[in-house]
Image (cartoon, rainbow, N blue to C red; front, side, top):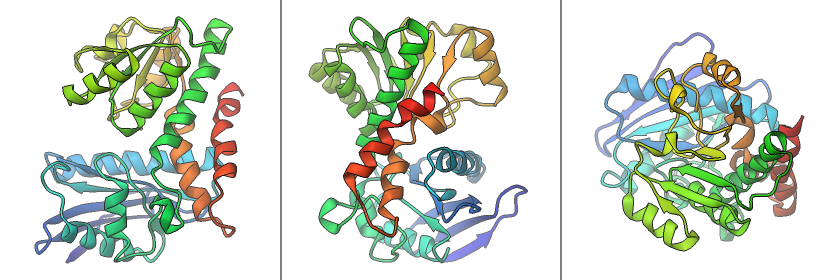
Amino acid sequence: MKIETIAREGYEHIARCEDPESGLRALISIHDTTLGPALGGMRMWPYASWDDALFDVLRLSKGMTYKSAVADTGLGGGKSVILGNPKTDKSAKLFEAMGSFVDSMGGRYITAEDVGTSVEDMVILKRKTKWVTGLPHEMGSSGDPSPWTALGVFRGMKACLEEVFGSGDFKGKTVAIQGCGHVGMYLARHLHEAGAKLFLADISEDRAKSLADETGGQVMDPSEILFAECDIMAPCALGAVLNDDTLPKLRTPIIAGAANNVLLREEHGLKLKEAGILYAPDYVINAGGIINVSIEVEPSGYDEARARAKVENIYIALKR
């Protein structure tokens, strides 16, 4: 296993790992540990190049610093990415190697599942490092963080509705969800139970159709859903979807979703404001998952009731 350090201004530590034996190619970025160890998920994605992966992990780790600070977790911000296709490239050897890579950070970075990885992957990781959260409940851990992220987004949406429409009632409101993975699925269920009408899209058409069948939603083409006429647009897939090309085509008064780094650049947030579109900052509204796993690393151990109370408070954070 070969681990190299990458220097980048504004970041405490960036490491690149290549392990020919397992096929692992990965990056860990520790942005800031002023408030505590860097906590952030592990993403697996078929990046086209090391440069693309580095661009992503830098943006994600910086976002985690903001998210951890706003959510008052007492932790810093970090992230890791694995270059590979999560559908075809996973193996026990690969995640054991990734566990060793995480362990080499000496506790400065604590990981959890993210896009392309699962609780099961984290269990394998645990064989090589103790610096992993979001393990199954039977292991004394906090479990899959996805339902908590979805709950926080749902509560945040309620605050946004009250701001724009004067009422947090979802009945009769239309929500477009871009991405029907774990978080998108749980979010759609919350919204369906609250009486919202749903537009759904995912790169897996079968996954979108299955969720539509369950919730009575309407499936849309992934390339079109961002521009759907709706009351809330919820980006719940990858980031940078709000940019110079997409902003003029938006037909919604609210952007509130689970995706990280939704804005390509900070200036796009100002452009949303100029267009009269309310934007719920991603590092506030999608903090439910990180809040949940952060409680796991507290000295007193994981407490589900405390996790739920803190996640529910995302509503209050967005009302400020």
